[in-house]
Amino acid sequence: MSEHYDQLETRSADEREADLFGRLPAALRAALAAPAYRERLAGIDPDAVRDRAALARLPVLRKSELPALQAAAPPFGGFVPGPASGFARLYTSPGPIFEPEPDGPDPWGSARGLHAAGFRPGDIVLNTFSYHLVPAGHLMDSAARAVGCVVIPAGPGNTDGQVELIGAYRPTAYCGTPDFLKIVLDAAGRAGIDASPLRKALVSGAAFPRSLQAELSGRGVEAFQAYATADLGIVAYESEAREGLVGNEGLVVEIVRPGTGDPVPEGEVGEIVVTSLDPRHPWIRLALGDLTAILPGESPCGRTNVRIRGWLGRADQTAKMKGMFVRPEQVAAVAARHPGLGRLRLVVTREGEADAMTLRAEAESRDPALAEALADSLQSVTRLRGAVELVPPGTLPNDGRVIADERPVG
Image 1 (cartoon, rainbow, N blue to C red):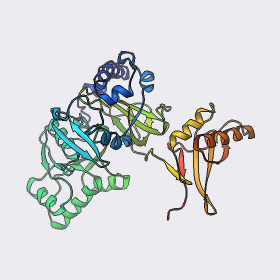
Image 2 (image 1 turned 90 degrees about the vertical axis):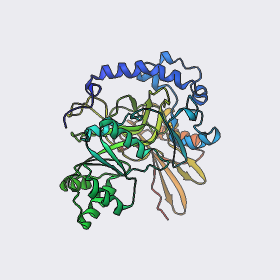
Image 3 (image 1 turned 45 degrees about the vertical axis):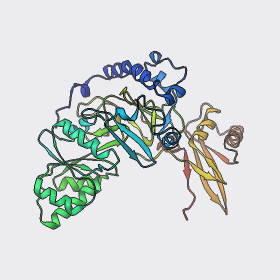
Image 4 (image 1 turned 60 degrees about the vertical axis):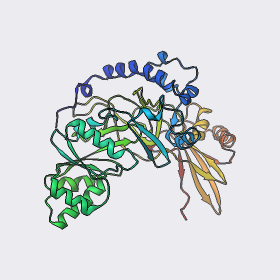
């Protein structure tokens, strides 16, 4: 499994950056043909956006905004340059969010993720992702066929039917959620169906703890995980090195401080933001709402693209307190008024029968005047009073959380 999908995976970091940012101006020009991007990116010179610093100055588009934006300007919120009739398939995901599929083989560019999981020409793939309305089934189907595999479009559920397919077609590979793979293998065992030809899997859409990975491996199935979205396809995928997830080629990945568009230092947990360069449907700084962090260095598997730690939680940490919403971007606004601070975390609790909040801030100084100034900024930004606790640098955990709602549930 040391073979790579193509030479793009092993090029130098400088070559990759030059390629991505050489193509970015064309993607921006395509985006500006869409009315919503034309408004959001007004005054932007696409030819001036040729490095990460320039990209970071562009506004972030939050995926959580898309349902309202698309409802106001159906079907795609004005973020697609052409009409819906110019695409191969049209989908909807929970939200609802409406997504088009560009025409052509492997339209999401996800084949290399399956290749890294060991999928090869001639493999028979049991694809249990849904083909109904959502893109997941077709996303993996097209990627598997681009690799040269034969696909069983099984879809989710119907465990007995899945076992029957395993007995008849003897698939060698699986796509779907990791927990459903275990369910299917268990059911095949109870039914006396030989599932031993199934030796490899690409799993996504659910947690994949090490315990489940070890159990599947013990049963002869080497399963690798992918971080994928309906908008972008496979964003990052696991390789045989099993050291983080390797970024897909053709995407610009940034990690930003939640509630902002500001990139964080390497290794810091933040929200993943992705820019895609397909002119048919470019995404410019799409914030996916998930937390992760960049792993330093290159993968031992030889792939040289950036690596992420995988899914580390949700970035949307909005809390409602005393009838008002407190948002991560408000914590960021407080931090912006006081340069030199480290991490900040707003802790929401209950004191007696009332909501209470404490802003914990990493600072070199325990100066009461700084704490008082922070309390004033907190009230000014959130319209709510809160306490301030100054803590030494490095005290707050590196988990991307800026709001911690610790109120009891129920």
